Image (tube, rainbow, N blue to C red; front, side, top):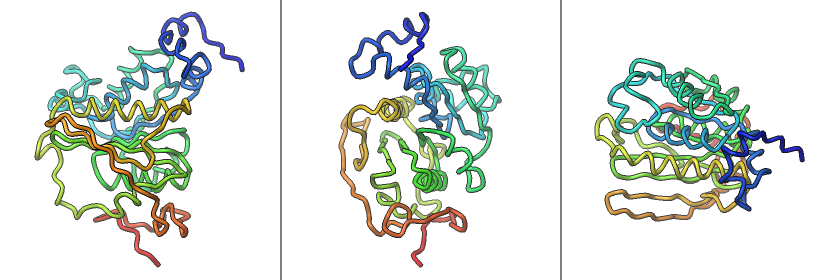
Length: 270
């Protein structure tokens, strides 16, 4: 295997290279990896920061929003000077300053049914930092069809959760068959969020993504990790594959065409 790490890379990634679990071969895997991050906000910011620092060679970033001053309390890759700038551009500038080894592919768009398959199918790993259920179900369904692992995260006030969805394991619909009714779950603009919370959950997501690329350790496949910052506790709940799941079960879908991702995003059985 031709590793072809130059002197600068050997220095930059030296703390990886001296680890038996990573080494120069593992670092080359990271440099060759293509990971897409859905969202450059609270969760996406630490994910982008740490994946770029780790040397993930290609980072796709999907976000259609611009930086607002209220973002800066938690979205650590953006600065006051970036207010009004598209988040994908601010994120790209941050990554370019941090690590020139990383190529950023910005997608200034909202992930939806008409573009999800084209975007996600180009990548080895998807990191789901979406802030809405519609996007989460679209990501899950497309990733299952394309056989791409997804690292999911979500936050609320003082609480966070994370899990990893693989083509072989249970999917997001096995865990949550449908979304809550619209309007029943308030967002952080209405309820607030502890500024450091997404840093903790985002770092867990970045860790899972790196492990998937390296092929080391046990991921959160089939386990939902709950984090409560108020009590400083972690709890893990196991969940299993549902044989009747319309996406990964015995009668799995072949396409997302015709699925209604409005409301509860439910797929009705035929």
